[in-house]
Length: 382
Image (cartoon, rainbow, N blue to C red):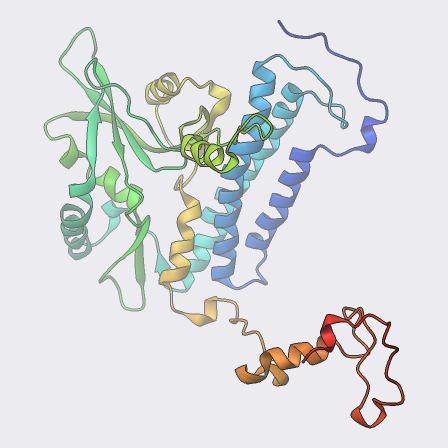
């Protein structure tokens, strides 16, 4: 039974909400991706970090707040918000960040990459020679590790791991009682999400997203079936750890068990590649037991955090930040002198780490030798 809502905390206007403050930090990371003063590949890297941060934020922070709201907890935090009120504010700010993230990718970074000869065309728009290579690559490397599943009473909806890439499709059937059927293709993590297609125009490097290739070849996976709609989707699950340190006999074993269970937590968010039809959207929400407010439509690849692979594939140093090489202090360049140097520097008169008196020169050792009753510091030994 929900508890009665207590009075708001006095002075709550002086406090910032923890989750909204974190989203403000993530906004600053997004601004680094939008900053034209940063190298292009560094901006791509910042954009992928924004997406990765949002996923982890929903796995832990949002998942915990949803549990509080569902349990009817109406306690006001120091900032004056209950869990339900915080979720409403988070949803508004997070959706705005997602829109700005994909706007940055579609309108800023992709055009900038195209000027440098890096393109991301749809497989349908590739020249015939590149399409032929892509079909061969699909049948050779991708098709053997995919398992398409059409849902029916004997084939229920499979478990979808948190953060994994999946393809959903609506298939037309001849059954009047069930005119459409939901189908799912789970994409193993072993496959690279971004790869380069050889060929193309001179001075151009063509990259394709794995999800686009699989959606392009869906008729090969569902031979003879009419595909009404399809989309790529990703599920974010509750990844909180629930360990009672006082009641647990072996903390290490308890944490290991929780780590194995964390990817099987309850779904908290569903991301789909836009555009997607209403019927397919509702089918996915129903099988995952989510509401419409938990759905996020992405105007681009749902796994945009995997753009870090593009940074690794590209070798043009002009587009990357200069590599930082940490200098080595001259006194530490010879390995044989490493520990003697540390011992001398740690026990020098200017060092505060040595608790005992500083060592004196040999010529003055007799006249300034400490009394026998004085305790010697361990740093005196050589």
